[in-house]
Image 1: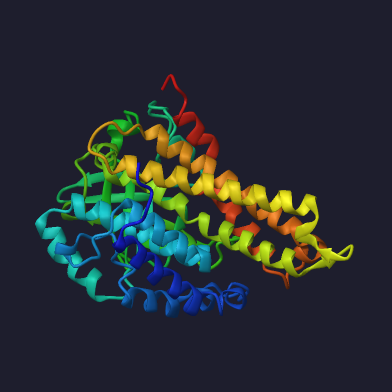
Image 2 (image 1 turned 45 degrees about the horizontal axis):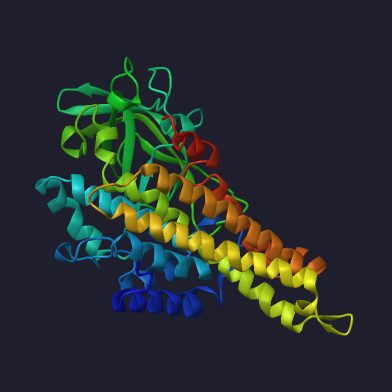
Length: 392
């Protein structure tokens, strides 16, 4: 088994790291403390990243993108998130959704949307799945009509009329195109009752509700999507009627949880690096605290957790890229292990800083707030464990 990076992967890694170091890190801590979400959202940073080709990275080269594979995206996502997790999540949402759309679009749809996506550096994407009363039900193995998505789409001639609400939607309120998950047949379970549509901001009957204020990931935006008799033409349907689950069962579903989880490696690595530097310079008992065995053990555990999480995710990504033999449980459990390992890293790193680590003037509290998000983001760890049970 060869775990070395290719020349292309090393170049992408260097590009993303340089971007994070020069454009994100110098401003992120002040930027995330801005109260107004509109002022806080880092459009300037995202545009610079887009001009480097980061926004379109997951599109095939023949479509005008970077042609990055799943492992490439894991590597780049970690480096951007080393600068800031919220910025990385904004890019990652767009990566996985444009990859999905490119596979399900017909030629007419591709002709309408792809040129604008390529040309506009502010063209990001979102997917509307989670609802106020429905979250993990969409992923855990419940296939009764009473479980899962409630947002309804009803056929009316050549249109569909959509009513319902989504919340916690990543890139909500900033995306220029939304992939919307709806229930078109309330008499069957989600495996046969979901249909995907595209909706655009400004479309009659579609509005953005509140922007959610989050503990971490504050430079990404999550918001409510509200649909009140929103008419969507059948030409904007991107799955078969009732075929939404089948449409997402390809590479979009296969790798998206792995790709998303790889971003949490970034703040965890940053926390470890800052704790290591602090421990080398902070003197107590006549010597740097790194020379005290208790502190050294914590740092050793951080390093072990980081290496294990990174290798687990990269192996899962590599397996997902193979044509045969991939077990989706590998991706689910890689996400669980990595998110919990990164939480341990951030927690220990804060402890290395002692009382100073608890102060907002230190960087550690931000790392801990950010990594906490992935205990539930990209599917709660409890739901991922259910999906990974051996008898399912």
